Amino acid sequence: MIYTVTFNPAVDYVIRLPEITPGTVNRSRDEEIFFGGKGINVSIMLKNLGVESTVLGFSAGFTGRAIEDGIKDLGIRTEFIRLEKGCSRINVKIRSRDSETEINGQGPDIDQNALDSLFERLDRLQDGDILVLAGSIPPSLPEDIYERIMERLSDRDIYTAVDASGKLLTNVLPFRPFLVKPNQPELEEIFKKKFSSEEEVAEYAQKLREMGARNVLVSRDSRGAVLADENGIIHNIAAPVGKAVNSVGAGDSMLAGFIAGRLKENDLSRALALAAAAGSATAFSEGIADAEFVRRLFEEISRR
Image 1: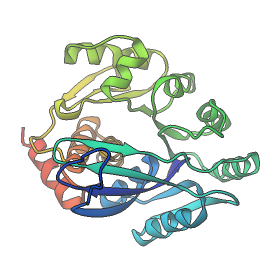
Image 2: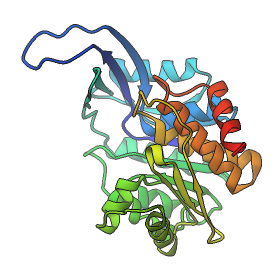
Image 3: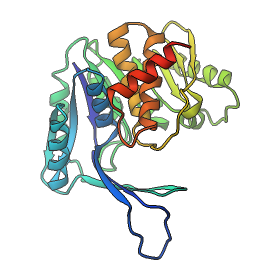
Image 4: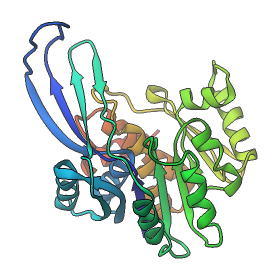
């Protein structure tokens, strides 16, 4: 079973309008609501690709109920821990012709009792299960929460995938995660260096492997992705051509595509192709892309 953890899920309220004029009344052209958070996005794409998963995390208030119900309506299993106070956050995303502005809520406080409940659920994971830890953590949680989780599971054969930035990612490397997925700016931030070529990205992806990660997948937006795999082999893949209309969930879709490809194909090159297809399909869509769009892009990439 695959489990994804979303510490701070959200209602994503997307507003579209031709242009934004600050300090005046702006009227939207249309609006959409999505239920988000990086782990949730991974689970949605996995579902679209025919792979089951369970969403873990915390929810609070009426917005939390809406998030839980919305995910269940997609046919995805949830095991959220309900918080007694606060409300799950609302993220407002304003998209105009020339810009995209995001206002992200803070979310509720998570107390020790709620955190202990999450640990109890994680204790049920069994050998061979996959755990996805994705995204930032709310201020009420300890900064080493990812490390605590991985240390707690270290006596079992759990395949852990981590999509995070900075120390949140580097501090888990001694626990030998199966996969880490920084994007290129996050990789540059870790090593305090700007990369001018694909070869440099590959070189520093290998350095993350030397620090403990088994596989390192670096997303590079329209430039594709680089995979430094567990056998020490570098794979490069170009992104399919298309118009990017959405920056939310593309990296999460890439992570889900890689996991689904690894499970179905047991071939890292094919898994990378599905990852690139899934990530690009979502970037070219208004929300998480559907299976048919991913399939078409996967076939396009595979014919190269």
